Image 1 (tube, rainbow, N blue to C red):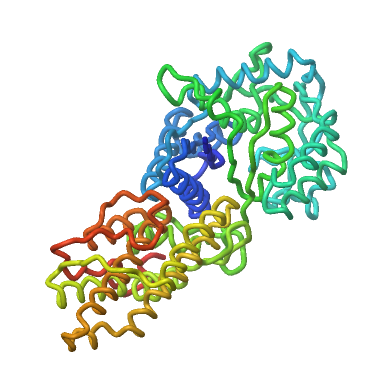
Image 2: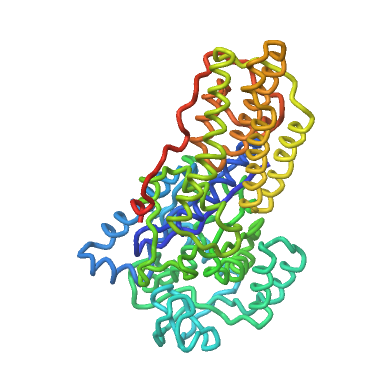
Amino acid sequence: MSFYVTTPIYYVNASPHIGHAYTTIAADILARHRRQRGENTFFLTGTDEHGSNIPRVAAEAGLGLQEFVDRNAAAFEDMTSRVNASNDFFVRTTDPRHGERVQEFLERIRERGEIYEGVYAGLYCTRCEAFYGEDELVDGLCPQHGIPPEHVEEKNYFFRLSAYRDPLLRLYEERPDFVLPRFRSNEARSFIERGLEDISVSRAGQHWGVPVPWDPGQIVYVWIDALVNYWSALAFARPDEDLRPRLWPDVRHLLAKDILKFHCVIWPALLLAAGLDVPKQLFVHGYLLMDERKMSKSLGNVIDPLDLIDVYGVDALRFYLFRVATFGQDGNISVDGLHERYERELGNDLGNLLSRTTAMVARYRDGRLRAAPVSKELQAAVGAVQTEAASRLDEFDLTGALELVWDLVRTLNRHVEQSAPWELARDGSRAGELDGVLYELADGLRAVAVALAAYVPDTSVRILEALGQPDSAPWEDVSAGRAVEADGIEAAPPLFPRVDAPTAAA
């Protein structure tokens, strides 16, 4: 079985922020989990480097166009690495190999009679590089950026999007899980039902972009160029191998709700027009908010994810983003909230559990973990995580799956208090009971570490190493009684050392 997951490719007109990290980490969690299940997994992310904004912003920065996009693309590659994403390829739309496939894609649509020449006259937002109808504006302003759109009139090539109303509605009818969550699917369907207008696939009078193959005086409209990356990158991500026959269309796109129309309406229509299969699924998530407002450079409320990583570590950030809000909904985040979760859940619930367990094995059993039976209650608790968390992740419920794992962490903490190993250690006649409790705790922590490996990969390895367990983490090991006997276990240092000042990350 194959699992191909993508993030949107990020626009390089500004630096990465927490919203970019959010989608990247979500895709990484899904990719890591599928690898745990032994599936052939491919994870794509990258940067969108064309568009009419780039020449202006590059000039303001005093840089040449390629120099500007190279610098900003490097910042996104650094962010991808710093959040510990395990992506298999990083695509850039200035890569000539991508441009060739964009031209190939457009030629396929043109050969089928779905592209024609015309004149566009209408409203265009330069910030989101999107055309809008009057009814889509909010008080006459772009609904995403709150700025007045420009009136544009130019010769363009158009795609017959209007012809795809009924095919798209059939697609949504036949595949009710095509777009998730369901309320986002309803939003896309409503947009389609209102009727679709043909859209420009080219821009005139510009040179920064992929030339239209049959008319090099025009460039491919940036959003068409960008969407094709999901298909094009597979052609050259591996030397001398085209992955498209193997991985397309078994792809899951992750995206934020502001680009729903492009991905859930225009993209499947373009694929149908090109004679290609539509994606397996699209999952649309909400915004990360500060003070109930979407983060924006203009508002000055953007959090730099790398600043948070410098203070709390990457695993704390990865954990927090999917604890604080249900994936798919908007979520309010704050540095104070991250600090509180870091101390209470990561430091106390998980970190102290590992410290106490390893310290008791070291003190009461000279560092030796002895195999013992696991109670039916703990077997059931671990088994529930294996089956239910996997099901939640299959449904993109990253938050719900993580909560199931945390239920097991709480169960193990209760088990420490209820079994009181320190009391058992005082009575030599209860040595067998003590061995059993210590094994149950170590085995439960091992299962937690495997279940958390997709979320907090570095922490997972540290837990397994502290318990003397193999650091491989196949999903089948989220099962009770799989801890191996081990010697030399020592009291583990804190998994999450104290951080005194949350303002240090602001």
